[in-house]
Length: 160
Image 1 (cartoon, rainbow, N blue to C red):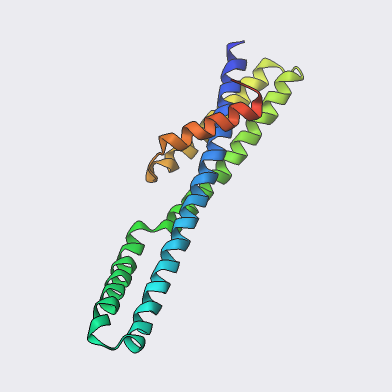
Image 2: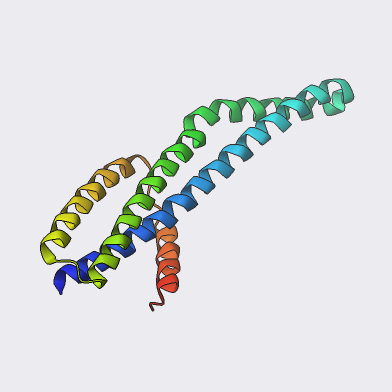
């Protein structure tokens, strides 16, 4: 019975991580897109302001836009949301694979698979999980997002 409970918990953890890394992938992709749009708008605004606002009264506008554009362009590679999105997406795919494997194992347990096969499969899945978790160290953990994902998994599974 303990093995069964442990597999159930691991399956829910894998499902939580699927949600979590998919959310992070979307978050990083949006931030990357918004940052690129901001740089484009600021750069275009700066060039436009040279011709539109030639007078002394407007010189500050193109200087500010130019500064914002330059600062953002310098910061963009440092925050590197595009790379973070790729890493989060890769983790998401790995967690999907593991969650699916746990779900299959759970179905096999329900259909009466023998304990020896269950234990062997479980050990293999644990090793997969350890390898996946090694890749998570590059990205900061968002505890509030984890709580949201936990709630989603509980709701999807009809748990409290």
